[in-house]
Structures are given as C-alpha cells and as structure tokens.
Length: 49
Image (cartoon, rainbow, N blue to C red; front, side, top):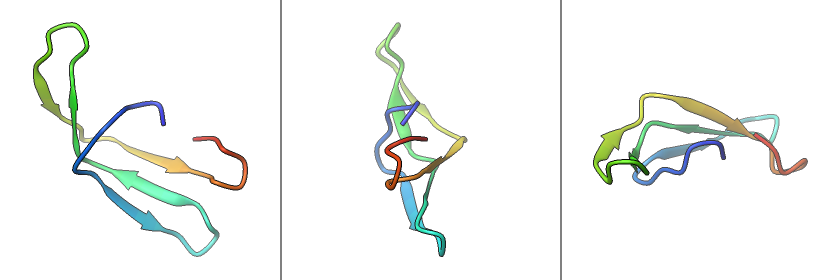
C-alpha cells in the first residue's frame, strides 16, 4: 500500500483485487492524526497496488 492506514474499509472485488478506501493515518512529520479520503486497489496475485 502506498498509504499506511487504519480503520479503513476493504472490499473484495469480483476479479480478486481488493479496494481499500478511507481510514485514518498519522502524519510522519507532525505526528498528527489525519483522515484519508483516498482509495487504492490492491492486487494480491501480483503483490502490488
């Protein structure tokens, strides 16, 4: 994943990929919590986003 996150949703798609959306992360520079409004597609067959 390109963005580390927690409290996200993960949905298995019909083609085997996983849609990861939303959640929270911690800003590495400030240590502040932030809400993620992005989504990523993860393909476990190829171990890539």
